[in-house]
Picture 1: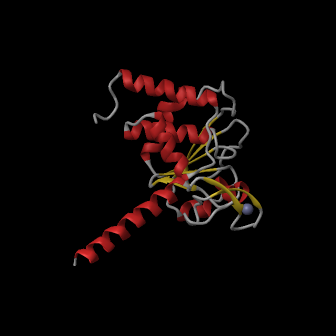
Picture 2 (picture 1 turned 60 degrees about the horizontal axis):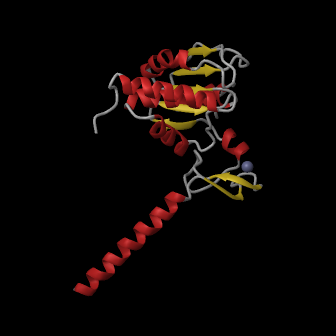
Length: 206
Ligand SMILES: [Zn+2]
């Protein structure tokens, strides 16, 4: 009986070890893309399945990334596929990009922000407005590539909604969509928001 217990315990330990190893490796690796077979940087947390990897191009073409049950994040091309957005239950589209044409659709509530992907662009000025917009309904947030501007808006939303720090919100977003990378100016603006939240005692009491 005690032997059986020991075997059982060893199995549990092995499973925990394997799981922790898997968790460490779930970001970017070098390998073959599941779709186009090219050997390059592979993003393992794809929207298709967690255990297969896609190259940057195939990842971006795969569709909007689900960040939480109410927020999706994508590039410009996927934001035009209204049929797919409807299937996902998305009701609103939030666009950030002065170079991106406005959506001409009455099927979704839309919001368009004219900002360039430049560290000096004032994202901070839109943090309150975009937070209120996203909170209303299931929203797709997108910019040109779904890497910097849209990710910044989503991170700000997660910080305010969940009362969490920049680092925590960044990790949530990065885990779901490994290609996100807010530019340094945007990170500073998000940290400014974090300081403001700290000052007014907005964070969750742990
Ligand atoms: Zn590929």
